[in-house]
Image (spheres, rainbow, N blue to C red):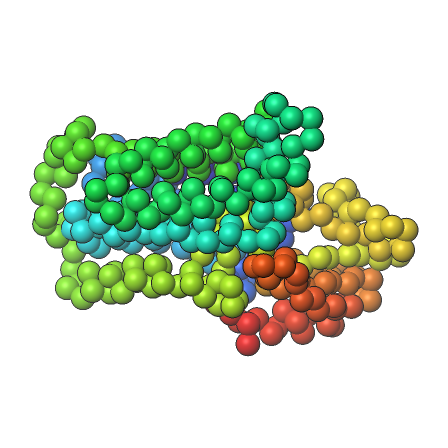
Length: 395
């Protein structure tokens, strides 16, 4: 966690302190001073919890502090809800409020569900014809001059393999083999997505290393191996500092929600990343364009990421490169979030009718087609943003 925070450090610094132009879109709207305070307190909680756990590993209030800290950070900026941050929040809640043996069982099941939901998201027309083909083309390119056609056919094997890994992790007899397969998969992705190949962000690469280590820790390493007994001297007791007897029950309900909620991703209830939709381009999105007449209203850091759209005097904002340059992470893949960015830009820089947005729905699993809604002007963008209530769904 400390390493992942380090390689994505601009994401965790309040934009008010860095004077960055990339807007912070909170789950709730707070005054600027409250946003800065929430970010600073949240970062402090996360660091204290992680450092204390590193010095003396265990399952108690320290993991609760990590979850609370990340929660405060996400409240003021949805962009921070990277998949590994969401995973830390969930695991922190489990480790803080359940005996460690039970917490480990829940963590293991949720980990298996990550692979299952991730695979389900990739069994999709968009993945096979875009990201999946790009990944498979990397090794095929070493042997073939034009690997695109074959790569498209083979891309479907990626989610099928991931689906098999998730299933093996749920069965005691195959759990160790599944853990080894997961480690091999993440090591392979680290190579294929690295700066020498597809050049994904260090956060993405780092999380693959974390997941590989997690697979070894949960599914490959034998329970008695290492220093588990010394770091957890009373594994079946309730964590120190435990007060309310109802907390374990509520935690189990919470864990069940985390397991079930991703089913609703395709109908727009649960967010894509919190549904473990990883490397999958079927997600909803907003295409933001600014008219040539208003370009000078925007700061240079925004104009640098505008691209001419076939000479019609409208310039498209490239959100993904802007996100990587400003925050070292992928853009949050949600139409609601990206529409909010358009609304902030329109109101902050008084773009009036010089902004237009195309809202694209989640793509059809079998055809890749999307439904689009077109918005022109600050007023329409603001009204469309008001149609969403956070954090779950559209009214």
